[in-house]
Image (tube, rainbow, N blue to C red; front, side, top):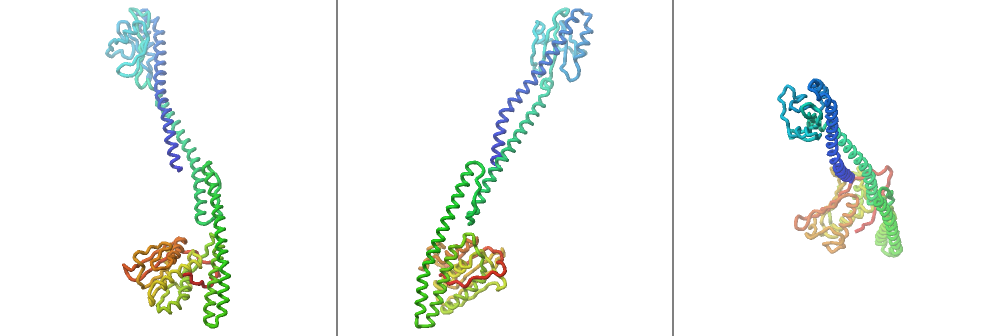
Length: 454
């Protein structure tokens, strides 16, 4: 925008200056010629006035020659005196005498005038009345260079004025553009902060009226979004809180079971469900920008251990490969969301592959410095028509499991990918990549294990 404003100013100023300076240059050319002609006319008239008495007698010829010679100094127009008999007093003495032209004949009739010969330049002819033997003529000849002397200096001055005006215009346009661009960039940075989840960001109304209007509307939009999100979080928390009553009833029913082992198992499941409800309430009331970090390797080991009894019941071989416990792999994802994504992937393997199908969980640090989570199985693969869209499933489920994993990775700035279909090769490999997060501060504790979400 700033560059375009400068180009527009430069083009407009150049056009205006062209429209003004071209006539001025032509005017200075005409003015230079008129000034030189006026000076030459004054010189010719002075010589004619001075030589008039001298030419009345033939004895004063020497005086006329001295007068003509005195005015023919270097750099000035050439002055000559053409006598009535055609002889010439002036620079042409000693050279072949130029013929008497029609202009000279016309001047002998008593008319003083200026004309431009075909050879260029300009001549001023003034008759000298009272000369012996007829009328003599004073001729002052201006060359082309003498006629337009000083014109180049005037043109350079005009060019300098034009360049100066262009530079001043560009400077003013640059300052104006800087204000406009600065206000626009600050408005864009505020929008970026809002897009990143900082709902406290507000734009400062500045710049032209249009930008101030946009800033005001952006602030209104941010405030409205903040209000709506706060209302949604409270609604989600209220809904989750309502689940406490039926969950408490389930816990009481579990305690009344006669089979002690079954009662303990159901009570453990109900306790895990209560923790999930509490997590939903905490997450709903958590500020939008509050994004705690989680150790991907620790979560993977934890969830693998949680699902191991069910995998063994189905005759599955499991393998978990992660960096050692002393090498955390922090990623910018809340621990509960990371666990829910991993549970969804493991649950898909347990639900949609034949019993006895082995699977592997791998966590590694990529060469680019990110983190990668892979869940691979040796099952029949995904359907050939599979599409990773929310609510779309090829196995009769809700189709939300893989979408939960995809959104978890992409919301953190990572990627989601699936490999392997029934038409290509057996087995499916689902890979989530995450950017690395800063190391958690020393002494930070992790929450208790989560219940499965799939």
